[in-house]
Length: 105
Length: 224
Image (cartoon, rainbow over all chains, first blue to last red):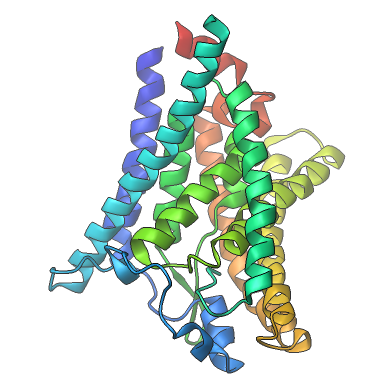
């Protein structure tokens, strides 16, 4: 049954990549709840001093160097989805391996 | 709901980092003790889905959009503390790779969306579920209500942080944030229940809150 288990993971990952790669270019570009409140209540400029972290590779979910807006958002989405998958998988894997090693000792 | 740099004061950000580090530390220690084989890829794919679904902003009112949060969904799927880890990974990558949410505000963002939206909302989910009949519909209903609460409570926490920071008075921030997020929460409830019913229909053993402890069936299966 191990095969079916991985099938589920792959299917869920595929759904995520479709969301990030195909649907995200059609997402609403209006400000979100917090941005709307910040604009309406007059404190949006407090956030305009720029980000403290200067090394963002894909600021604003637009991959630099790609002219088409939707293509750039789509590729940013796919890169992000894979990065997040790898990050969470990696952390879980390390925690799991440390435990297995402890149990074996 | 991602707070950028500059919205929240230094002490509030420091408190956010402190509390979030404590809870994430607890979640890491717990995962280190009890994480099962099958949960490793499940944590990865839950995080991937939350990130991807968060990219698809939906319009909620004239000139305003909202997006999925996913913390309650993650908590129902992998357990509340693992969900807190999942949300921390998503928020950290959004901050470092996409400039979505400030680095100084990462602590408060993890608090609002991972701890309030995930862990606390999961407690609400568990409480509602306890008093309702043990049917699929009641399970989904509990998740839907808790998903709505996760967004509204997370936005209220955000409003309180803004007010304590002196950015905007509480009497203005709280109703404005909770009001718009009461609408966004409806989308959250819809996406959460639809996703959960799809997973329940295909692999109910993977839904931790449904199958109990850590999905014993799936573990046995994965070890074969």
